[in-house]
Amino acid sequence: MMSHLPVLIVGAGPTGLMMACELERHGIPFRIIDKKKEPTQSSNATWIQTRTLEIFDAIGIVDRFLKIGHQCEAINFYAKGKALAKIPLSQIDSTYPFILMLPQSETERLLNEKLKESKIRVERSLELVDIKQINNGVISIIKLPNGGTENITSDWIIACDGANSTVREKCQISFPGEDLPEQFMVADAKMSSFLPTNEIHAFFDKGTIFPEKGTLFSAFPWGSKEYRLSANLYLESPRQIFTEQEVREIVAERTYGNYIVDTVSWISPFWIHSKIVDQMQQGSIFLAGDAAHIHSPAGGQGMNTGIQDAFNLAWKLALVIKQKAKISLLNSYQEERFPIVKNIVNKTDFYTNMVLFDKSFSNKLKKFSHELSEHPHLSNKMGEQLTQIDIHYKKSPVINYEEKPNAKSPQQGERAPDVMINDSKKLYEYMSNSLHNILLFTGNNQEEHDLDKIKKLQHLIENKFSDFVKTFVITNEKVEKINNIIIDSTNAIHQRYKVNHFCTYIIRPDNYIAYYSHGIDLVVIEKFLQCYLSIR
Image (spheres, helix red, strand yellow):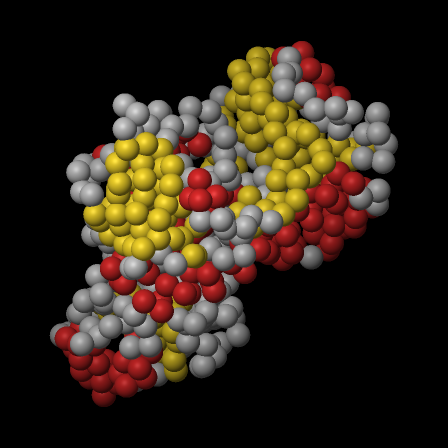
């Protein structure tokens, strides 16, 4: 076993496993350890958002999730048992316009399966007990199952070891925030109902014991009458144990008879903590997932945010380790992810407090329902926020914002939208590599001299930047002697990107837009790439 390696991943939950999958895909040696003897056995985080499905698609495993997960196509809100508002997801801008429900145990199993195919395994019952940062690296002291210790030296550590992160503690990284003074309960149950089983249902009401507090009950379907339930309890004092009968009573009372519990297989109390580190990097150590941020489970954001942390960091770290990028590229992890994470923590905290403690919440919910009915585009906007496809890196040191695309076109810092080109091919399939993808659009009025320019430019780019980029020419019809052509015969890509002229998009390995320019200019493209890539 390697005693020195480029990366040590601490923690093998979804974030750590995602990091491992990505480092393997980028060809970076690493070890991944976890102090637990076995993977997660309970359901825990159950929402797989649209953006996460797109990420799983990028690494070639989305079909495994779709095969066993349960698709939810809308979210319904009820007040006193009566339907009040609905957020449909079917129109969001993705080839996966839904939320996939799947127990965390299954998510971890599928990610582990992906690693095993590359002959990589999680080293379990290995507990990190101390860390020493040295020049250009870290020494990790690991407690072994037999009671002995091992010293692992690595250039980098990725802390994915959860809310009680040992890495964060040993590095004395502050984790400020607040605890919500309200106990919750989650349960897995089989239930009968006439409500749609491919939609999420959330019930709001006033409390009977404490009228100044609101009650919340949510039902998330998994299929075959199986549900994850969540409810606040507004108890006078905390409790650890709850009975199946209490679950039945809560369901009957808060859903006004819309659900009938058949059986309950698991019950667990929990409290909401809302915390975030100020810095997601300290020297050679990066924090990701719950080790860096925890918050209300409202909207199923937590696990998905951690997976996106890993997807953002992995390609940058890989390029630096391979000496293909300047080390300053790593600064963009904090610059890009921290504002996103802070916004999620603040929003989930705000909405949770409003539901539970705002006496005017019922009136706000009615107003919200009215606005959705009057302005259908708002529900689509909310769906894209919830499913995390609207994430926008607005102030990144490694994104060029100089030229402005059409106002309705995808903007720099946004994820590049996937497009169904025909019945069997998507745009993302062409970009399923670990490189920067340069999309050269010919527009709708291509002329011979312009095509000659594209041929020459493509040749120059691929000769000079072959280790970093892959170029695709997006055109309406086949053109001789041009490599990597994407035939946009139905004009679907041009229409989605609102392009009708020559232009250039550069898409990063995490499928976010790094650069746009009118026309195609090798000098400008080269200048941009050299801002963080080490091009010789």
